[in-house]
Length: 353
Figure (tube, rainbow, N blue to C red):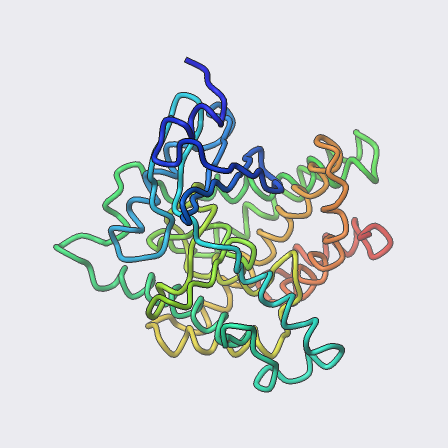
């Protein structure tokens, strides 16, 4: 039976609480915070037909059981797409870093070791180090299995990031970006060339399929929980699309953030920190990082244009110059030489706006 968000909340321990709806994001999900008796919780309102709703619940419970800081599911209405979730607060990495930048002023990007601290004592460097430590732990947990099975392979529904997954995502670029600048006939020809190039890149990439990959591991989806210990200080959100894949994917999400600048010095320090903690071969890792960086950034360019064209969300267009800059750096890797030449020929600088 269909019911409203208010009816859902009134059937939980927060019945009669003060409900305040929050700003949305790029997805169809909506959020609200409910307060009662000095306690708060979050309400996630998800169209059941349009989002991977059961996966969110399943993965949240799995992450919690594994000892990580996903929000606890306190109540659910699967039919209508409502969840009552533990409130992980307001201190996202992006919010904290924005505050730090305002405090530091124009010298913020100059020296990551001397940047100021936020009100609870954290620095940008500590935020990113803790996130990297979490990714390193996920990698280590793959190598050292628990009870004879990989910690993150115990969810039967978990699938791997296959070649088709990557191809489907990179197709968003010719399907949404190229039609804004070229005729339908030209787009069809260019799309065929582009997809063939990606077929060959992926065939030669040897990307792993055995690491838990959040797939949206960036500053907006990471919450700072200073009262917790170790990597549990990183609160995790928006993980319903998680798959098993290559460790470099979440690194790219974090360090090539579409919504905020991550200083190259900081990004390199974080890659080095990750390599020091894991058994990853550096050459192979950097190869995967560049390929997945290009793959993810081309996907994001397509998504942001789709949000504008299809959904009227013009705000995301302002991030395109940053995403193009990420992509151009990724394309310098030798493994992407053919893709770089194709883009330089067919989508030169004047079309990258």
